[in-house]
Length: 212
Image 1 (cartoon, rainbow, N blue to C red):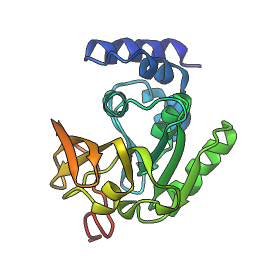
Image 2: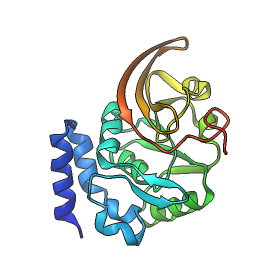
Image 3: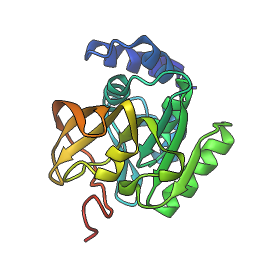
Image 4: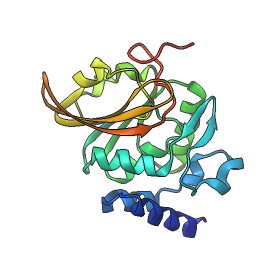
């Protein structure tokens, strides 16, 4: 179902500059329509963000591809995702062979994602809590991907990143962010690159935005 639409979407994001074949292959296998509300399924393979309820969205496929390509996860890598949302990004990471740990703050979205993971037999560790402080129990992580915009880079997340690991996080105001690609050289040395003009829902939590 929707196979043609999915392949057309992959061609579209390739034309926008996504070159990592592993990422393209993973996105061609994960069925995005299963991660959106039924009423939105006909739009699942358009290159746009879609509402999934509770003021949250499933990210634009190009954005998912860009962030995943920047993270460059390898099979066996331990990856922490902040902001499970629909579960789509976690499913892409799992498809790439990563050991995925994901945190969602909204209990209804969390429960919905768990059902999808179970239905698709995705062995993903998930918890419902404040993602801005990370998940210390399974640290350090080879990669951390944050799918919500933060006012700054949470220090707890930096501490939970392994040396040589990479964190992808949107940082800015509540409407527009730059995507920071941070590589941890050592405990006190980081290399940071930046890609501008992204828009994510706010990261709410102790080290993010305060809930209104």
